[in-house]
Image 1: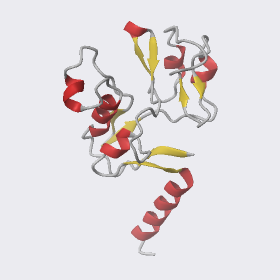
Image 2: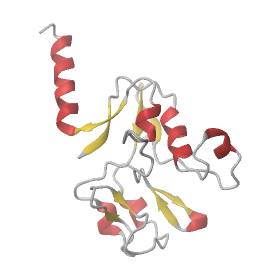
Image 3: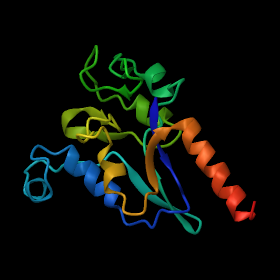
Image 4: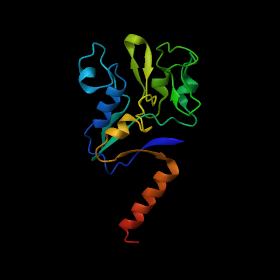
Length: 164
């Protein structure tokens, strides 16, 4: 399964990923339309400063997802494709925010008005099957790849830096 993985050396902190995520989750699905919507579209990826680096954080769709275990309503679940979500689930989110409290990455946010926990749901894939945040990243810091391919690329870059 492909994952959104981060090359922290490449992130400039431009927040293009945040904007693209919000637009992809808007009603209009375009920047100008989203800016004028009465219900503000919300991002599901967060760029934070960590020491001297900018780091984009989003749901890791954990194999053993604490948000699923903590969801007392049973709304948080894993789709057949491996995505952890509460959208179109077996139950409705009650807004208890247990998932927010247990997420080790802090990437689940509460939309209080709708009593709904929001997180990366991968309902933003473009025609090529790439998430909006990855597609919008101008430096290639976000990649939608198989985990083994990402690791192999990091190893190869490390060896190149050694001149090997």
